[in-house]
Length: 121
Image 1 (cartoon, rainbow, N blue to C red):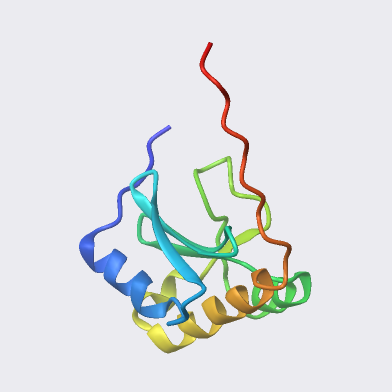
Image 2 (image 1 turned 90 degrees about the horizontal axis):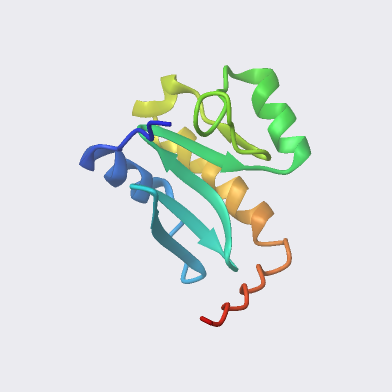
């Protein structure tokens, strides 16, 4: 499976729409970027595409009003995430609005528990 690599401009655009909040951590993921709160990813970059994890109501509203995309590798989209419309690639304000909704939703979820480290035998 080929994972698309984002350009520097894609990474800059992603960082620009992620909320400026001390609880947010932006980390590299498989050559792309992910934005996390409490250890849970709320937005990700997959090549040039930004995907978000929304409440069921917000996801349904977004999908009803706009042409969204599956988020992740072709045929293996990430469950619970939706790719924001390609037409928004130049609309930072609209993208930031939905990334903020994703942050607010995921911030209400329980913190992700750290996986125990396996001991080497």
